[in-house]
Length: 235
Image (cartoon, rainbow, N blue to C red; front, side, top):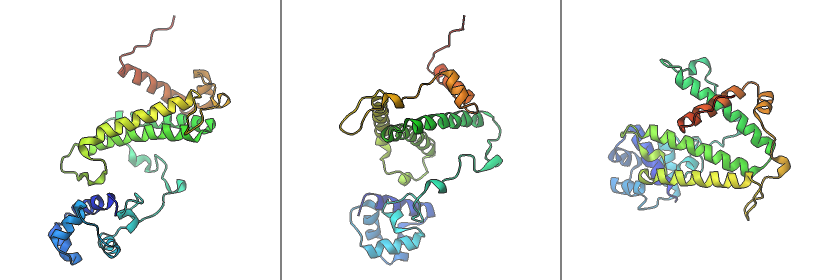
């Protein structure tokens, strides 16, 4: 058994609001044994994995951490909804700021991933994607953990360690992406070929991405303002 199983069955029980005593009785095992399973002290057999999967209405693959989908389905690109699939109902009430920031970020991401696609470098795409995913992970976990009652079993990384671990992984992804983008190769990958490094300028970006360019420019300005940098007025 792997480390995901104890965490996931504990999370499922707490989500349901069930006590260990109740679940143990339903599954016809002792509470002590269920406690050992949830703590990872003892490993269960395949029969119990199937039984507890049926009890919680999830797949065995989900319990074993082989898929993030509780039904066990494999996620395909075409199965993922578009960012604005929720339609007009997905607008934020009371303030325009969240909607504005979401559009600035989402539109800028369109430019970044189009550049990655044209650069045609798998490892560069992986490292840039990893950096961005870790950013989302860190901020989501921060918001999720604001309520101390929210079950932390959703995450495999220990609460006390997750910030340092995610920041380290993010720094590593950034360093690898920079190394590749500068054309430097290692034993693991080849650097980006010079002919695949796209020529870019504000004029080129505006021409190639007329719908998204203004969002990127606003994002850059907002980011540099946060950095304490003021753009010098043009002469």
